[in-house]
Image (cartoon, rainbow, N blue to C red; front, side):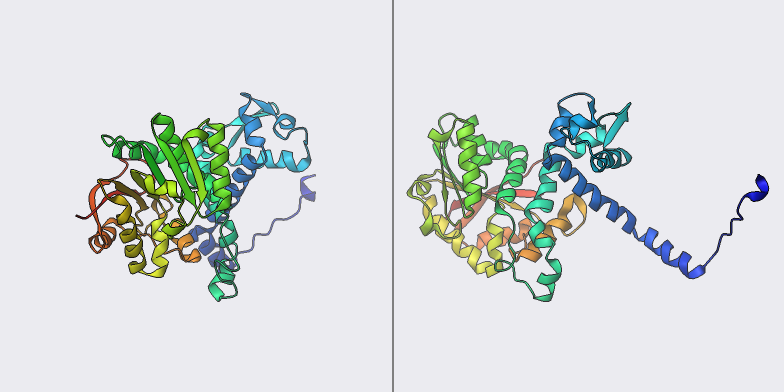
Length: 349
């Protein structure tokens, strides 16, 4: 009966209203949602659910969850539906257009870069800030995931640019210092049947990935990958010094942690390997200190890991002027891709 309905009393509390207004206006609710959605998309991919989703146009929960149709799994799919990652129709699911873009190759690589490769660092941010932990001793980034996700970005974003920079040179051998999973070397060798590629990286996990990828691509006969320190040329294999072109993408800026002169010193050392018209193609991110294209995120992980902060092109050109290398050309991707400059460097006469 209507007379049995409970009375509704709405209480207005000014302090409470002000506190929650500040919370909502701050953008914190959206930040929390973005954080959880990032983790959920990462779990979708890492669990194999994404691969099973893509196998058919519409898939049941049991098919997506590989038979483990638990309440947790069904709730996870419902969450992704609420977030407009999945469509649901009569108990079957598929990716929405937004879900397809969020789980695209570049999106997952960029997500993995921060959520997997650098997660061991960012989750210890408080300890690093207070001095309870030191990067390189107590905390390190995950080398294997770093090489894998960076390799994806390299394949999509840089191979065409590097190939363009090499046009007219007809190199017989290239060396990639800090090669990661070998993606750049393998893609170049795949495009150029007469090219031999050498890659070095300080991470054994990265070199293992590179060798595996080389064998999978049937390029083992034309590639070599070795563990070596890009900043210690004396550790490089002999095959590295025979390269017509040396390539380094996103590695040299890490040496700024030891000061600008340390970078100049390694550039001067590399000048010895560039006699006879050889070239060093140096690709470096151009930090601009804003929130576009994850620039601020990239800045933060470099601060936390003490790698040396990436410079803009004006600062790099000044470094080159103080070294034994001359910058002949600068290559950048038009419109799309990471904010990266490729500097074509040759030895001064």
